Each structure stands twice: as C-alpha cells, then as structure tokens.
Image 1 (spheres, rainbow, N blue to C red):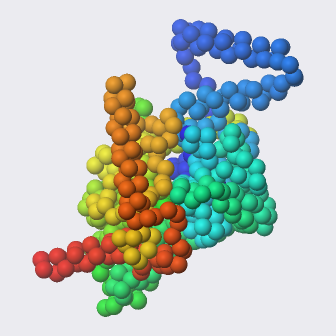
Image 2 (image 1 turned 90 degrees about the horizontal axis):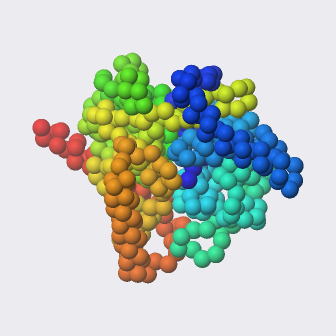
Image 3 (image 1 turned 180 degrees about the vertical axis):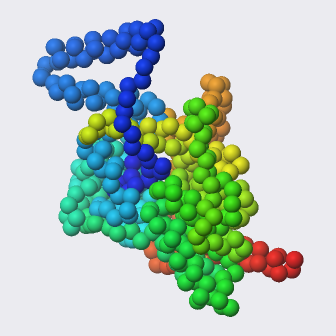
Length: 461
C-alpha cells in the first residue's frame, strides 16, 4: 500500500541531488550482472514473442516501479509527469480537490480532507473509499492513475463516488476543482482566556503564522494574557521539516527538536531549537493529535512531550517517522527513497508507532457526548503494506507483532459494533448535531479543562 497526497506536499526534508552510479568490487559486479541477466532474458522474451509490439522504455520503467514497491510505501520511481509534480506545492498554493489519499488492498482511501477545500466542504471524510471517479470504477487502477484522474483544470467539475462504513450504497459528490490557497493557521479565543490555534499543514512560514496568532490572541485575552494554548494538529499530514523546527522553537528554550537515524550511524542529522524569534516558554500548552496527524505534526508533538512542555491530548497519531529524499536521475526522472527515520529528543522512534497522547480523548460528533462517539476512520502508517518498522524484526517477532495487531483490530471492531448495537447507531448523524467551532469541539474543551487544571496548580504552587 502506498500513500500519495492529492496536490498536497507532505514530503519532509526533501533533498535533490544528482544520481551517480556507485562503484563495486569485481565479485559484486559479477553477482549483480548475473542477476540482471534474468531481467534481460524476460525483457527479450517480451520484445520478441509478445503478440503485439511493446514500448521497451515503458517496460523498463514499469519494472523499476515494481522494484521500488518492494521497499516501503514511501519509496517510488518518479517518471516525468510525477517528478514535475513532486517539485510543486510547498508554498501552500495548488489546484485540485484538497484530499490526501492512499492505496489499501486495491482501494483508494481518503487519509484526510484539507480544511476549507472542495472535498472538505462537500463532506468527504477520513476513511472514505473512493470507488468511482466520474462514474468509472477505480477497481484495479493504481494510486497515481487515480490521482491523475482527480486532477484537472481549475473550475472543471468531477464526480467522486464514495463508499463509507455504516452507510449503504455509494455516496456521490460533485466537486469543482479549484486553485486553493490554503490558510495554514486558524485561531480564536476560547472562554476569553485560552488561545486556540489550528495548524492545517506545515507549509512555508507556518511558524511565523502561529507566532502572529498568539500575539493577537494575547492582546484580546482577559488581562491581556492567555492562560493556556491549545495547538490543534489533528489531521495535519505534515509538510516542511524546517517549519516543524520553527513551531517547536516557539515553546522550547533550547535542545534537540529531532534527529535522524540512517543506515550509516555516522550520518546522523540533528535539528536544534532556534534561539531567536517569538518565544512563549511559560504558558501551559495542550497539543491535539489524532490518527491523521503525521510526520511534522508528530515531530512537534514528540518534542514538546519529551521536554514536558505540553500535554498531548487526543488519539494516537499516524506513525509517519521516515525520511524521504529525492534523487534526480536526469532532468525528467527521479527516485524518492527512504533514507532514514526520525527520532524524538529522547530517541523515541515514530515510524509505525506514532505519538501516544498523555491524555486519551476519543472523538465525538455532537454536543450529547454519550450518544455521538465517532469511530476513528484513520489509516495509520502501520496499516500500509510493506511499512517500515522502527526496528529490524526477526521473522518470529514479526509474526508475533502481526498476530497482536490483528487481535487488537478485532477487539476494536467488536467494541464498536457493541456500542452501535447499544445506541442503535446505523449511519451518519445529522450534520446539525456536529460542533460548529472549537468552542463546541469535545476534544478542544477537554484540552482546555486540563489546561485550567495546570493553571490552578501553578497558582497554588
């Protein structure tokens, strides 16, 4: 299973470098060429005996793509079309529907819709399965082909057919593609004393945007100073590593924000807290995360958690803790390759593990909490086929882990079914029951409650 963002940059610490063939010893060269002979034989067989003429370049590129899929979900061959698209969108402006999608078991699945985009406004949700594009089945098409079909000229319309758990039949959404300027930072004052800041993605100047929002909210707050900060990173798929460092640096005085562990232990990169810029080192902070909080979101949450600078509230994050780099093969093609994995300041690995909240708060859809518990539909890194584990496993360890994960999944499914039987929940609740803003959001209110507790404790001390 591979993950690909639909017109959304989620690559972190991407680097472009010119590919140079490595040198090998004579024995290794001989072994390599002997193995490549098998490829040459199959290629010759297809070229000479397949019942129609074939495009040799297309065959070779297909073979390379297949080779990359054996590595992990984030490593891939980038042909001319994909390579050019991979070099776009880090400024936060792009065209399309505004969803991040994935490929699981032959089905295109929505990881998260981006705030204020056509998909988000139409009501497409994390976990939805895209089964039709313009009334044509997506069965059997690749992730790249599906993304290509969903992209198009701004202003043009597209109909997307969705299969949603708990809902019978196919829900069809007619969306208008548009060029979107995503506003990464949203903020407001809650209960006159608490700053709510939502970051939708780590695009350029995200750190500056949060600093600006906090300054404004402090001026508006009672007594000109907020008593707590809720940093909402839910469904934030990541973005630029530099901005993860910038955001973390607002709340930290010094130390490591994140480091990487590569194949060669000597190739360790460490990113430190920036000493300059806007700082808030005293105000209590709660960071909200969920199953679609990935990559840069997990770096920030992990750093603030390790330094005990913030309490992490919500549900376990996605678990995207690997580092990808873009190797430029020539002017038109490249390879995206996983080269390392991220470590929190205390050397905790994020990959396929995620960040576990200090305070587990489930998601709810309405103001009547006991009647509106919502099943999380998020796909996490560990659900991806061929996902990297944080450590190298023996076959026995892998078998035991997979058995445990299967048991946990079945247990969660049983619990959800039991809750639904007890509540008579058969489908989506009416949209009017859903919270309309952070002031009515159950998880936000729980975060504020814990911030109040911290504030009272500090006063007593």
